[in-house]
Each structure stands twice: as C-alpha cells, then as structure tokens.
Length: 235
Image (cartoon, rainbow, N blue to C red):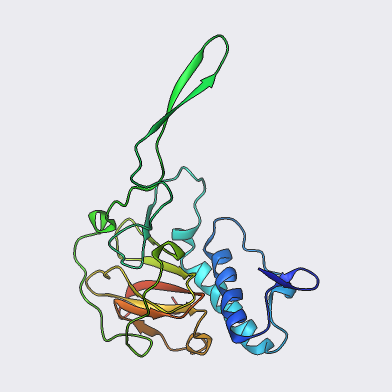
C-alpha cells in the first residue's frame, strides 16, 4: 500500500491513516529492529504522529521480552485467533488430507508427505487456567456487520507465567467487526495501546481498559497489552 511519491506509506484520508498505522503497528510487533522512515509519517499533524510513534516505541520496550527472541527456535506461547478468539483463522488448505510429493533425488526418488498449514485447532485448548470476563463493551458497543473471517487475523503472545500478554488483530474487511478477545487472567485486564481506527483514543496518557468484545473499524488494527490491574503503566 504505497500511495505517495518517494515510496512513503499510503496517506490522505482518515481511512488511509488507519491503514497506514495498521502497517506501522505490524512493524513494531515483528521480530528484529523496527524501521520507520519520515516518509511513513503524515505531515498533516506531526504532534499526533510523533505521540503515536513514541507510544509504540514504549510498547515495544515494555513487552520486548514477549516480542523479541534471540532465536526463531526459542519456545514461546504464540496463539492465532479468528474473529472468535477460541478458533484459529481459516488457514488456506486447512482440513485437507496430506498429499505425497515425489522428489527426485540421486540415486533414487523420495516420497515426502506435505501437510497443509492450520487445521482450526481451538485456541482455547491452549488457554491458561483462570481469567474472567472483562468490563463493559469498548468502542460504544454494538455488533459489527457480517464479515469474511478470511480477512481477519489475530495473534497473542503470553509470558511463561501467563500473567503478561499482548494481543494484536488486523481487520481487512470493509465493514466493522466485533472481535472477541482472549480472557485475561484473574487480577489482570486488557488495555488499549493502539487502535488505528480510533486514533484519538490512543493519545490519552490514561490507560483505556478493554472488554472481551471489541468493535473494530473497517481496515484497522488494534494492539492490546494484558497487565495486572493495579500496575503502574510506566513500570
């Protein structure tokens, strides 16, 4: 999604800004060193842009131990979610029978079974014990319009103790989606870090609590952090 001369990320309407910050949020959720150029920021409101960028840098630092691993082989509790957090996204090829591919190798051919990715394993089967329902609905309540689950993907990463976690979701649909969030552990709550569809809600210094149902705007992403309810957000 490049729409500006010089190779900057898509800019223009508020909807464009939402998509742009969805892409930028993916950068801060990825392993490695986040790379953001000045061209990727809007020149219409530098104060807001720098504030959001600073907030994402603070998020990266705070949850660095969950996001960044020294090796891709290091174990971590990573879970994939659909609009309903209890099931995985509809991966392409899920549910298909494994096929056998014959590979020519000297001095003889070898048959290798190929298993499709995914499988729709309920995410709740790996959920930590405990947790409970959160507060009232965020985002003004109300359900989203019916949407294609294949245009939605969510992920969460949990600490070994299960007392810290991050959750991120990307709604690629052209309509709103009411996503369900994994239950927080007892004594913990989910807090909003970024909602690219409601940028104004991300600029407050106050922690914004999120319930288990969250209404996502079209073409938007959200980033949440789970922490103890009474923890200092600056710690």
